[in-house]
Image 1 (cartoon, helix red, strand yellow):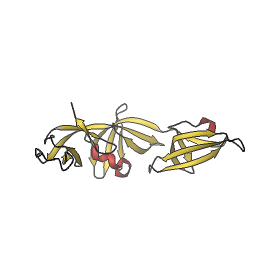
Image 2 (spheres, one colour):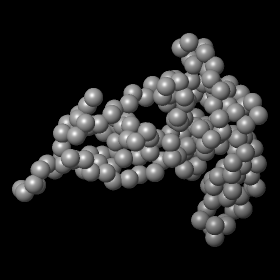
Image 3 (tube, helix red, strand yellow):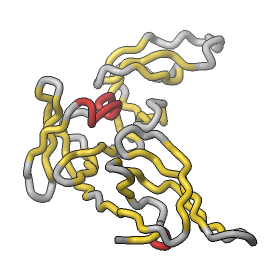
Image 4 (cartoon, one colour):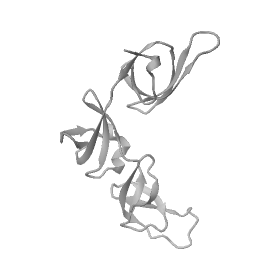
Length: 186
């Protein structure tokens, strides 16, 4: 069992049966009273961020998350089937676990799946992925009232804002964190 002296950014703690990632921490030694550790924790499952203070030297449970390199194979109903690229084992992951990352995944998309006790917790994709524009209106020359952007639908079905010069069937880089246009793919 570890203590608060072992805290580091990025480690995962088990607090009252829930998993929390340490976003940041600070050891504080006030002039009066005992030392303590101030932390900012992010829930692994919900993404909720909380502040939590621990007395210095308190025992904490550190959990090890296994991060596996996987590839998205296909969708089966509401579930997603992934394959471990090292062992070729397949894992079925629910839509609730995949979440908004489903908006950016095509077949054969590489992903990192965080697993704890054999259960997938969340999916990480590359920061930006190339996606083909399946539909967009042609840009009207001289129209700058919309800030120089127009809506476009990509091959996964989501709609993003792209510059006026982007045409249908072009491949663009889309940020997987917020769905924003990042530029043309090379």
